[in-house]
Length: 218
Image 1 (cartoon, rainbow, N blue to C red):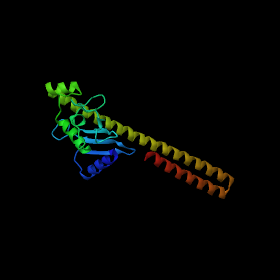
Image 2: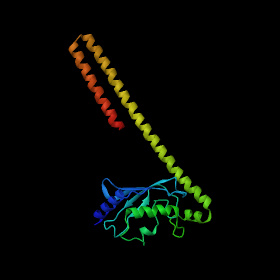
Image 3: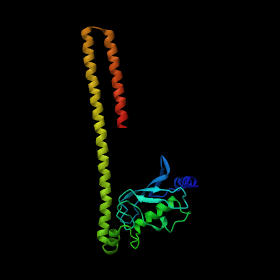
């Protein structure tokens, strides 16, 4: 039942695209989904894009999935430590008629309309109620921290790729030097047939090195 329903939910997501919401199952496990929701427009979260993970029970949709934010979110109804979400649709308000799109839509609405009376993050709930300026500052800071971390990770990945390219070029130069030495030895021996063979071997080594370098950097 769960497998059939999850496949049906996926088809509905593909058929009815909703702006600001995207989700798909993991490549190796239909019961674990990854999702992204964009912050609602005209809300303090609108500049953020938030990753979530959904873990479905074997008897879905009789029971709701466990949903948590992978991206850090400062919000009254989201636990800061593990990203779990306190929202009625995932607890007492759950019915089997809800699908994945309805879940993600409700969570996105929760970003713009928190419920401080049912807090998961007490600090965020108190700030939302008593000091909205500081609450907004903390939300914006958490979003900016995520963006900075993503930029840092991208920068490191690009550097690693460049280093791999440099290593590959060095290996190719080494092969070139080896080819020159081999050619000199062949000239000393005045053996034209051996010289041709060495040149062919050098070309083969360069081709293999180029292929290996491309396979590392791709």
